[in-house]
Amino acid sequence: MTDKPFGPLSFGKKVAYATPAFALAVVGIPVYVYIPKFYTDVVGVPISFMGLILLGVRLFDAVTDPAIGLLSDHTVTRFGRRRPYIAIASILVAISVCALFNPPLWASVEMEKMWFSVWIFVLFLFWTIVVVPYESLGPELSFDYHERTSLFALRDGFLIAGTLAAASAPGVIDWAYDLTGRPQDEKKKFFIMSALYAPL
Image (cartoon, rainbow, N blue to C red; front, side):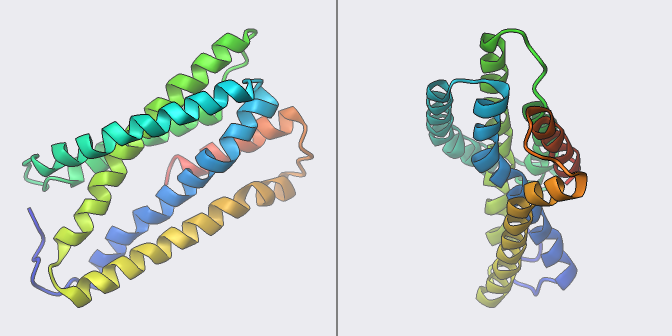
């Protein structure tokens, strides 16, 4: 299902499509950049194990990305073939972010390793279920060259803004809450980030 693919898109509709890019960037940067350091330095997950799991997640993506694309291509609903995946998986991404950013205090490193492994795979699965249909939805909103150009320019603008917000958030939180880098401060910082990011 498409929305007037040959007609002009209203600015409101373009913004509605573009704004999720901000939230996806805000969540994505910490997972790629900050979470590995947090789990190795604060939680205590060995860095060699971390590397293996992150490699496994990328290989997992190589399978799930085309699978979700194929699945959403063949989905038929009254909301279109992409939107149900985006709507439902977004909630599950938020839950996964909260779990990943707030590991419980286990006595065993093995339990911490298991917690990280499970939630990073769960997060990436639901991330894929959001991102692949989301990026596929854009070209279906309009077949007009100029409309697509302005739509994707707006989306990429929100993506850049989200990236900048995500990159600066840890420093801003450190400053606002006077955090000094101690383990308990790092846990507090990731709790605050999850409280800010999950609703997005």
